[in-house]
Amino acid sequence: MKPARFDYMAPSTLSEALGLLESVPGAKVIAGGQSLGPMLNLRLVQPQLIVDISRIPEMSAVEDDGDCTVYGACVTHAAIEDGRAADGTGGVLARVASGIAYRAVRTRGTIGGSLAHADPAADWLSALTALGAEITAADGKQERRIPIEALMTGVFETAIGSAELLTGVRVPKLSANARFGYYKICRKTGEFAEAIGVALQDPERGRYRGVVGATEGSPIVLDDLPSLKAGTEADPGELRERLKGHGMDDPYEIQLHAVALERAIQEALA
Ligand SMILES: Cc1cc2nc3c(=O)[nH]c(=O)nc-3n(C[C@H](O)[C@H](O)[C@H](O)COP(=O)(O)OP(=O)(O)OC[C@H]3O[C@@H](n4cnc5c(N)ncnc54)[C@H](O)[C@@H]3O)c2cc1C
Image 1 (cartoon, protein in one colour):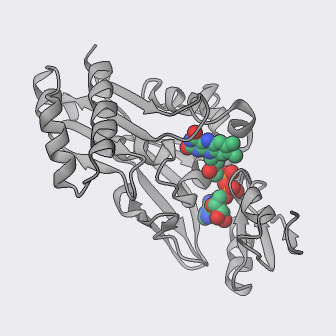
Image 2 (cartoon, rainbow, N blue to C red; image 1 turned 60 degrees about the vertical axis):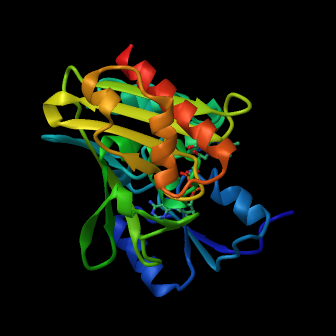
């Protein structure tokens, strides 16, 4: 199937893009097109106007802001994988990027597009939740910051308004001795995950966070995990109980996600 007819504009400034979104109700943003393209082809979305934000220079910029590295929304997965974008996490982001889909998808797909799409199985959503990232969003009047835990309001739904753009992601730097583990369970390499486990141990910043992703909603955050605090193996029974406490009730899902987290913790502590 081919997309329904639409107008296409590729502004070169942020204010122009925001002006278009405000003046044309139902206009849709395109960044890398890796998720929007299939949705257009299947006619799941039929916007009157598509606003291509990939030619706005500041959307692909990467800046050092003291404790954080700030990534423009259109920085691609490949730029992070290749180290072309500065990384204040000591290679954690490059590692996560390299596990997203296939190289062709990573070349075009963007960090902001992935977060705005809000697929529960997306890698950035889980990884950046573990890192405690913040999203920046702007409309024509103001810019605001959204903690990543508050970004996703439902499956494929976010707190970003229809006349707003996700402009960037603020990723806190990690301490030199921080440890990170990431474990993704998927049937084939390059496919979306069935379960994601993420573990962060950063004593200098007081962070002992486990995250479970590819759930039926937002990633589940488990702060102050005893195994990460003590630097010892995780207790699988305890992980399963904590997932149940977060509303997970299917025994297969609980087991799959607990194993993903357990292996992420093992990797972080290895
Ligand atoms: C075969 C295949 C396999 C994949 N496997 C994985 C995987 O294993 N892990 C994974 O994480 N992802 C995977 N993806 C998704 C991929 O990572 C895409 O990059 C991502 O979903 C969307 O990014 P994009 O830049 O292409 O966004 P687009 O497709 O351009 O846009 C996606 C949605 O976000 C909106 N949007 C985009 N940018 C913004 C913005 N700045 N502000 C507001 N709204 C915005 C668009 O309007 C659209 O609704 C896969 C994709 C494909 C095609």
